[in-house]
Image (cartoon, rainbow, N blue to C red; front, side, top):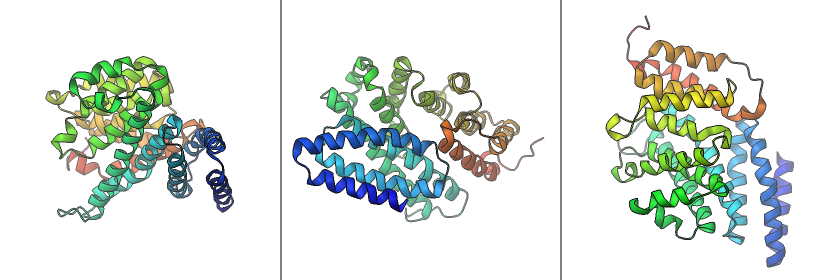
Amino acid sequence: MRHRIKIWIVILLLVLLAGCSTRTLMINSVTEVMETGIIAFEQDDDFEMLEKAFPANIKLLETFLANDPGNEKLLVLLSRMYASYAFAFLEEKIEAAASTVNRSADGTGEYAVLKQTATRYYQKGTDYALRALEVRHPGARENLHRVSTAGPFVQSLGTRDVPALFCYGFNLGAYVDLSRDSVKVIARAYLVEMAMKRVLALDPTYFHGSAHLVLLAFYAARSPMMGGNLNLALAHYQKLKALNGNQFFLSDLYYARYYLYQKQDRRQFVRVLTGIVNASVDDKTYLMFNQVAVNRAKLYLNRIDQFFGLAEEN
């Protein structure tokens, strides 16, 4: 790990000392390496190492971005890394804190501080994705902030825009989910649905079909008056299973946490989450996210009475 950090420091110094055109070429080369590198991150389940590595690499990329602010690939990569870090590490800590008495009404308790940090990171991820969309579509931010133009703009996006659009929808969706006490933020939830439906129309397999994952949670976590629809949530779960089989544990995690919780099916909730905890991993593609699912499943099982009350399973 220390050897790897030293290598990146040398690369950073070379980039900063290079001339403008040479610097841009070097940044592009490093970005290409990092695009492959983040896949290596996601295929590792050493959480202690990953939790330390993500922030260091994020700050390194932000240094590169300062020298090439219009680099679309860098912007998308930063958006994706902020999302992955907040989702994999901060949200797990939030879930753990939610099962304790650490919540604080004055916003200073562990639970509140973790939520504030995760919210800030998802906001950063959303902003980087918007900047990436702006590179190819000037005015993207303004179009997405207007109800009258958001739909036509999203529909105008093509396959090349899928990475930025997915990162935008994922980060915004998580930001909205953590900001349910803000009417202003909740009002932007329709953009999440719009973005993910367009991603699925353009490339339904992108990032393991995770747009289905976002929409599963989106439709199951809301009341019908707020756009919720359990039938649609179930359909997205089924499409995820058809796409990834049983090796992508987040499918079952979201199915339990959102769909089965809304159905108040305690028995099935326990069965599905226990299956995640006890499952064997044959495919290394999803290793980091599967470890997230295992950790989160254990937390949910420990909080079973918070989800379903003290009723007996039988």
